[in-house]
Image (cartoon, rainbow, N blue to C red; front, top):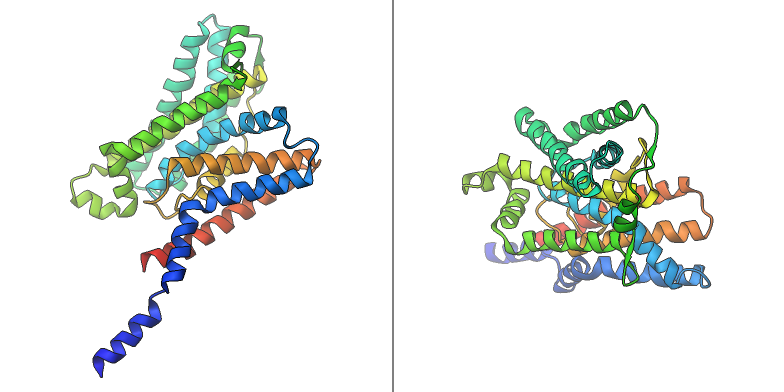
Length: 333
């Protein structure tokens, strides 16, 4: 009698194989399916312009910055954290890169110092503050998003910087075999980070940390070191995005990247990254960035005001996290 009741209870809480299969199918291919649906819908809404070669290349170009930022944010979400400062880091690294070139620094050295190195340093500050204070990354990066933006405004006197070496824009914002260089840069960065998550011990440890920080600690993983590395990666990605933004616009704007953290987080979450940590893949993040790019592009083609784009992004984040929570529970069972 007891065994029969136990069996009935088990059957009541265990989802059917069909539900489990659908949950797994959604996690594996749901993001790509959403992209395909968006492409078909966008083509129907704007048949004359959306599917043109120039417009599709523009979608890829616009998505490149979002993909870079999202790849960085992806790592912070992977450990059940967040990085709200990526937009401000983009602005600060872009501004410093431009000012270095204006001071006579060769553009390639300005990219390394003002973009990559400074981006990594700013990310390291976030990581160190998280480790030293023990506060959630949301609180730390909520503070540094204002600090980094304030520093950008101070060093620029709240004014744009332009007139630097034209070779910088020609190379970083140029094209190779018809493909925009920013797109190639984003793909290379995403490829390197995918390799890290897929084939390195660092990647496995980061997933373990996001799955269960306490278990990771007792298994010998240096939690603080990996937390620091995660934020350094986020900072470097934001720095590279800052360089690309300056190259594309031929100017460093102190208000560049405002609100970009929302798009980056949306790209990562829509791309299948679990907001609760421990699950997600770089290819999904790339597709998530493309989804954001397609949405912004079709709204622009339809002359929809940018205010509505913010509403769409917020709604997508809520929907994506809800879906993740629902299907995550199904798979956990």
